[in-house]
Amino acid sequence: MKVITIGRHSGNDVVIDNDDKVSRHHLQIVQYDDGSYHLIDFNSTNGTYINGDRVSGEAVLGEGDFVRIGDTMLPWTTYFEPDFVSQAQAGVEETSSITKEAKEKNAMQEAQEAQPSSSNSFAILGFIFAFIISLLGLIFSIVGISKAKKLGGKGKGLAVVGLILSIIKIVAEVIIVYFVYFAAQSVF
Image 1 (cartoon, one colour):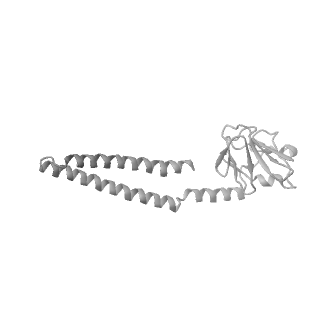
Image 2 (image 1 turned 180 degrees about the vertical axis):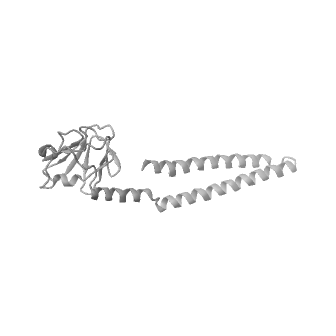
Image 3 (image 1 turned 90 degrees about the horizontal axis):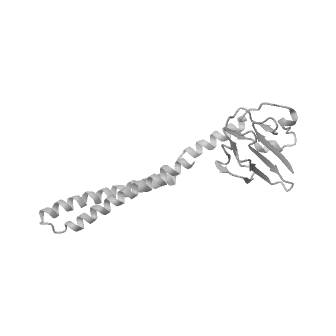
């Protein structure tokens, strides 16, 4: 079993002292004898993220996983290579927050996440189409009410019900569009 501690404090195996969002004792990564890796967040203030998802407590790591603490992407697999010497053992007090390779991977991942998927585009087109149909229903209801007035009130009740239903549907669609598209985008 091999344990690597990571944080701002100089007693950690990996010291990240140029990122204020990293806690003094932020996390540790354990490589067990069976070859599995486990990440343990030490209840850090700004959190630990694996592939963009916040981790609390312990989580299993796979070799292709991205680990980010604060603004720093960790090249964590390099910490378990035979020639790795911990900064605590070597007496090194400073480190680069992001290696060039990790920075490039992070930029590519962020660019992919920023692009809306085609399913989002189809969902938006569907909502726009339904919204237009609702507006047409609203217009026909208003026309129906005005014609009903000319006919002495016959059919006015049905036109009013159609008007109310159209308004409810439009409000519901606006709420759905907000939660499905805009709120989902803020999660990522």
